[in-house]
Each structure stands twice: as structure tokens, then as C-alpha cells.
Image (cartoon, rainbow, N blue to C red; front, side):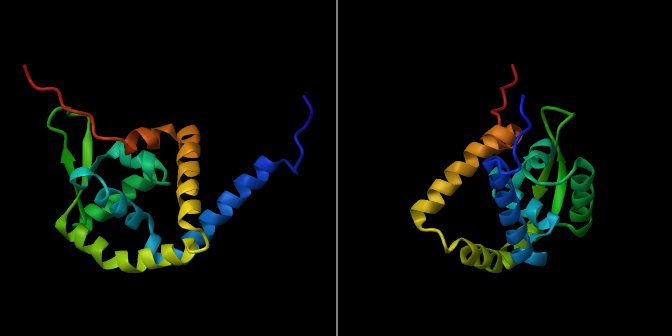
Length: 158
């Protein structure tokens, strides 16, 4: 098998994706800290709660980094850890009212920066871009896809 070329278009695509990620992170600045990403994910989830394993699949943090972020957010009262009532092995992170208030305070500026960043795309381009990103996520991070789906239905006790 021949050695791939450094001009391979897949290398270019990955590089562009990384550069866009870095640019968005820089534009969002302190507003996009790891803890704010956790709060946003929880706020957008049913009942403002996610299993810790699902949250880990959705955020771009190591397991130890997520654990430290969760510890900080619990200590400040932004989230709480909740034991699962039907599986002792499962722990949920749930956004508190204080955490919801924090999200509501930062959201206008966060959305303004995102709107400014994505304003170069038409609505049709944004829709296509979202569809493309979802397709790529399905390929490279299927755990995040599964974690983004509806919560499993709890079986009734017999």
C-alpha cells in the first residue's frame, strides 16, 4: 500500500474542522468553559438531567476532566448528582434552579456570538451543515448519538 499524500483532502477537511472548532472556542472565550458546556447540555436535556455516561459522551472532556467539572458544579450548587431509582450503578447529573439561572444569564451573549459566527451561512447552508455534522458524529462518536436520543423507557415493576 502506497504512503498517503499530505495533500489528501481528508487531512484538509479534518484541519478545517479543527480550525473552526478552535475559532468558535476563542470567540466564545470564557463563556465556553467546560463547565458551561456541561450546563448547556443539561439544560437542553429532558428534565434537565443526563446519565453521567451520556453526558461524558456528549462533551469534549476526558472522564477525569468531566468528574472534576461535575465536582465544581455540585460544590457551587449549579447541578446535583442524583442516584437512579431503578439501577444503583447509574448516576444522573441534574441542573438545579441556580444552574438554570446561570444558563439564562449567559445565553444571550452566547447565542449572539454564535449568530455572528454562523451569519456567513444561509439558512439552507446551515441546515446542510448541521445534517453533515450529524452524519459525521454518527461515524466518529456513536456514543454521543446514542446519548442524544430519548431516555430509555423504564419498565414497569411486575
